Image (cartoon, rainbow, N blue to C red; front, side):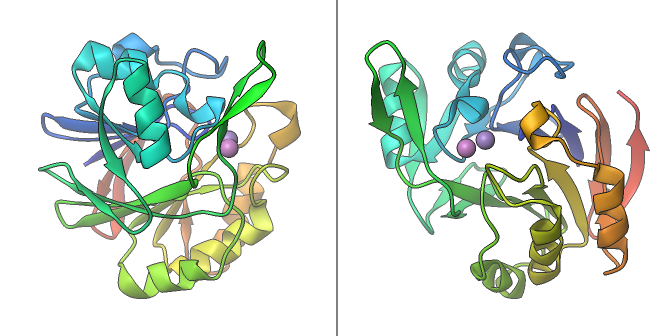
Length: 240
Ligand code: NI
Ligand code: MN
């Protein structure tokens, strides 16, 4: 199974002909190597409605005839933009055929800002995804603070890779993300949601050193970098 980090919170997972992307934010991210039109996916998973997570969702979904998986309110909004969707809500699982994606809680907010109209569209509860695919479990936390139910996720799932925000300010920072990784009993952590803007600048190498004190491996990928994930081990990492 191949993981491609596209920068910010955008993570693509690929196995054979099957691929999904989570939180596509490419055209608005100067650090992104890939363009929305480069992505070939069957599903687009959205953790919440903020612009830095949904920006390229509709174009990617339309170009690929891919379905968008999102919580009820956000899925409705995506349908208004012409996308096909699978609606979920807290604790619910979307069956993707080749994989299962469970929508789980996050502590954050979720809304679409209509600047000109000076109003906000409610985006539903923000969440994360626990993805089970060919015996591998990947947790994408979305944007979140540290919360103690992560212990429950760690008890109930064998998490091979946790994609955790470390940027601070809008999400948890590196110290809380280390605690999250420990509670999740994650084998490997891909830090996300950092360095995209000055406000969320972080030192991924320092974060990796903190993780290693707990025997957890940090995969500090740069945008465009891909690595192969096998159950309980990373076997190969390459530059973009
Ligand atoms: Ni957000
Ligand atoms: Mn965000």
